[in-house]
Picture 1 (spheres, rainbow, N blue to C red):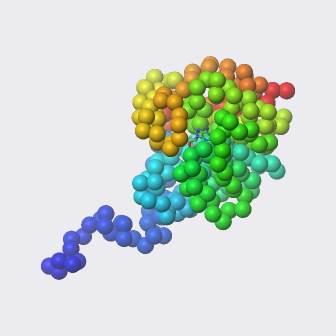
Picture 2 (cartoon, rainbow, N blue to C red):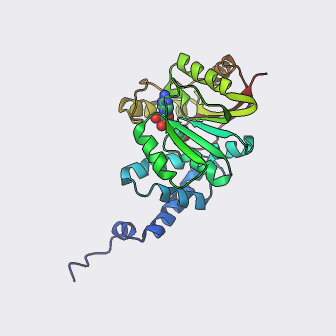
Picture 3 (cartoon, helix red, strand yellow):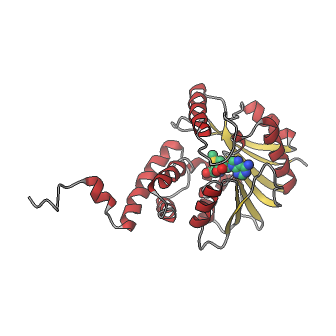
Length: 263
Ligand SMILES: C[S@@+](CC[C@H](N)C(=O)[O-])C[C@H]1O[C@@H](n2cnc3c(N)ncnc32)[C@H](O)[C@@H]1O
């Protein structure tokens, strides 16, 4: 047998596939997996386009991004359901790699500003948004800086990183930045069911101890009971319009609050 040709390897043949085809296959696989994390509007095409936007990163970063992407169906569903397209700016606080912002931008004409403290995550988000007029990502510490005037605010899996006082401070700043009818959508984690809470706490504690976010944070995630989330929200002069648990088989006790400023 010709040694240079070697044996057929599915892995080698996959890695060598034409880049376009590779991202079609990855997009398809991620799209299928995403339904384990809840249903939502992110299409196969969205998965393909988005994975291609991050394609120049090292594989290890891409895998982290794919892992995040498959969790986002229920979040996009809530955004589409509760947040109309507005003339003003949608501000995505703690935007990470920019995935939620880019998904929103792919589905509507909306000016979006993502703010992120981690320089490495910010750089990835900025590179992925290259060529998009409506999306801007900039560096900022949301616990220190004022929140710019916003038509909509997203706080997706960010508040749990902060102690009680800081959570309250961030939400109060958000309340000041909103106009009366505008929406703030908070997605975080709660304490029920107990097995999901235990798993999510375990996973997140490991991430925090190895500084997975590339910035200083507490050592434990600050998840709250639904009652404690509602109390925190009202202390920040916000009222809850709707609240929903994320239904899925995934081991994360996600909860979404749709809120407005109290009149
Ligand atoms: C769990 S990730 C969620 C990222 C993104 N919202 C998403 O849904 O994919 C939390 C993000 O908040 C960022 N972050 C943490 N503290 C921050 C701060 N003080 N100011 C701005 N961003 C912060 C982290 O760097 C990280 O990217």
